[in-house]
Image (cartoon, rainbow, N blue to C red; front, top):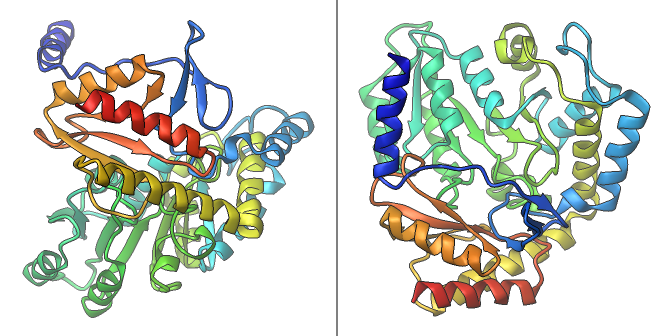
Length: 390
């Protein structure tokens, strides 16, 4: 029964041209990688926005931690504990996000699942942006709360839905949940109006800053900093695996909420904790961002502006924005895949994004720019893109 179901579903995937395959890559530096056959690529598909994965201080810190504390944490945080640096990193993340406290999770995905599953209950209501990340969608579903999806970044639609779905009883908690920077479109949420609505309607506001930290805001602190609304977001979710060059996730919030999640969030309680090397890498990357970040952010923003302006000047269908997530909408999934393949043949990696990640008819090329890309590398990518697009 299971085999026949798998066979039927995979045949549908193949016939639709939506098969997904793993590509083995070994990075040479922050923006170059090679495959098993030794072919070298310029990478425009990673989330390594500041290039910190190859920063000497980050690599040295991770290596020292493994040598001193071992390769793994050996168990869950509440049973075996974690390296001393984990608690320090949480304090530093809380300060960075202008929150009372923070809590580390194993991945950004599990942070959203763990926070929403831990806090939202049956009888609560979650208002979720239509383009939120899959981890938010799954966390909402697992929580068993009532889910109301509002149109993407449409504050009028959200306001109307808030009025249509008031709290039915005094124990009902209503949440507004949004990405800070949206991972597929690269646009930024309308935080000023979200804050107004959450205060007027007595909701809790969760913002996922996975693609915002190290990208927008003063010192790369994310969405609240970008809008000068520090202290106005109840729950700030983030990841260690993008600008912070490691793996893991975190939530920053009031101390009471963090203490509750330590005791009630099953993904936190029952997961083996992050390794010493993971903690040390993230802690060092955060320190570099806070102390030396302006130069990296300036390069990132300059590279982003250059690529966006060049693509727009060439008449390519770029979704407007200011972040280094730069989507070119193709529409047809087969065409997106063909362009992706043609670029790979030229040694350029850019992600073709197809259903179910995006809606049918909205397939796109999603390219990401980093602070470590040189102008020559950007020009190589732009030349290749214009060649294959035509």
